[in-house]
Image (cartoon, rainbow, N blue to C red; front, side):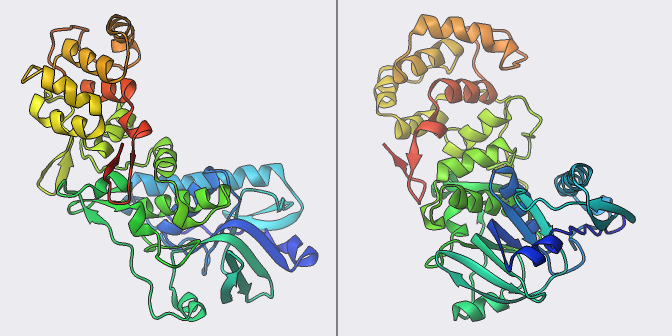
Length: 394
């Protein structure tokens, strides 16, 4: 696939009308991470500008060398531009070799400026201001840098910015509950929100140029701060996690649970809580959705989340985790009617949850079925908070 040169004539009318262009989130970079950050910020509903330092996104190579997720990003950007050009006309631009007339709408939520260098960068109140080589200025509330940080380091008068540290998925500590991106590489890893935030540097995120998952996580985090007009240090973990899940970014790198799975969201949420844990083997994390749930694997995690679960497990020693007992558990802990829960579950079992099994109170539940029921009736991911280390706050 040839490199596409997306030329957005967004600056042309603004040069005449204003010296300063304002946006909520400014992303600097040419790679897949910059594109992912910009697209996610835009989708999350804030004005976003991506400033590349070259003719287009250098991450775009042959389709055979790029993941489906990265190819989808470029496709979405192409569709977005095509719609924008179709709706507006006046200035001339070239897209895919064809000249197209378009009028620029400065209120649009996504703009891209290609191949305009920035010469200076500085703090501006709680945000940022960039001077461009063409004499213009950019102002933004939040800055996401996925590029060489040399100019930024000089402006901040510091020697270095620490690289974003991802963690190997392990249950020896609870930090995995603060994940905002699951990464499958040579080993299962995740990014904690608190490893993305930079100490003593508000409204600034610095990410490697080539990682789409980190880019998407940074875009949602930047959008949160801009949308709620707050500092990045005050980011709300649950809101950012929920936003990313709504756009199908896996928070846990489960090899055997894909986004097309009808129970993907419930399994991701229960996976983040650690109520059911992955099996890690061969450098991959497996959720094993069709394996039967055991009493011992859920006892302590549920007791950690709910005081009433401690009482229930004390009263129900070493019993099978079948549907009847699970209904008893969620009804007791969640203050629900047992009979009403049975009736509701029977209606939803195949139609809503898409389970292949039959509704049977005596059946031992799979990890898939248990995840969906716990997520639906107790909502540990949505309703129970954790601190910066992942410890449950009750």
